[in-house]
Length: 322
View 1 (cartoon, rainbow, N blue to C red):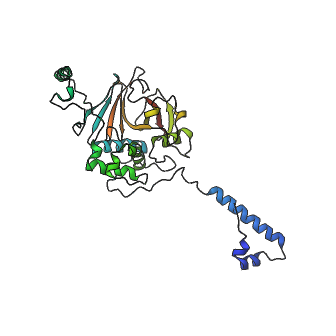
View 2 (tube, helix red, strand yellow):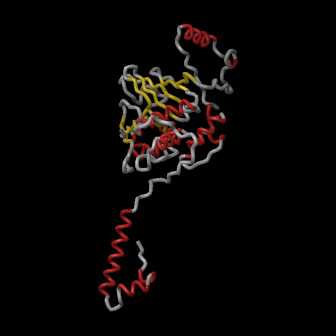
View 3 (cartoon, rainbow, N blue to C red):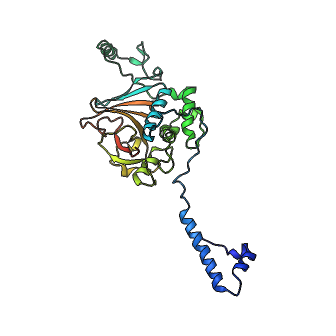
């Protein structure tokens, strides 16, 4: 630290308090100034590990139960956003399937995909017969909803997703929101945490899941709201469950996660039913919407990384809030 001599800035005051014929007093004064500067530097609050955006004005303030804890607000706000998007539900089954069980929009017709009610692209009659038998048996069909333009491509979906991006200080276009380079699942989690009242000491927002996962893993925050717990384990409402994806889909441990570099997906746990062996979790950018995932537990009766290959869960961010 470079300290300028106080004499150059306040010559009259300096000469009055520490005359030239008292060198010991002058040295003592400079020593005191240096001590104060060092003490002041030690007590200055450290900046966040990365820049945090000031939330933009939002007329859609979340309304939560009076007196709700931060953990409860996280769950309630996630439920509210899911309902605002139309309540799409995705089932991750023990049979290693992943499909949309309910959606506010019809499945999009994409090139190369069968057209409902016709025999386009060689649709197999046996498959249609199996679908009819499933319907007649009273079982609800699980609609295979291919990746494509979903709820995020609607004016309402675009507006909602833009709110999430704003929490990390970015303004994105409706076109960007539908592109893979602007996946918005991490900013959804960040938005929910900020809306629930978590501050920079508890949680830092980020546009990559791996950012706040590494924050929790490395314990960089003074009052962290989450800690990492390996799987298998049973989550609780308010926890965040995470999986690696893409090239890193089958990581062995959280120690392998790189800050801002490991592709991941995380969801907020909103309900746990051990008797039904089912966990409900809400996440953003799941089939182009805020969706609820119905996660069927494996033989362990807990969340694990082997029951469903579509989402090989890696860790729980255990909520430490009351």
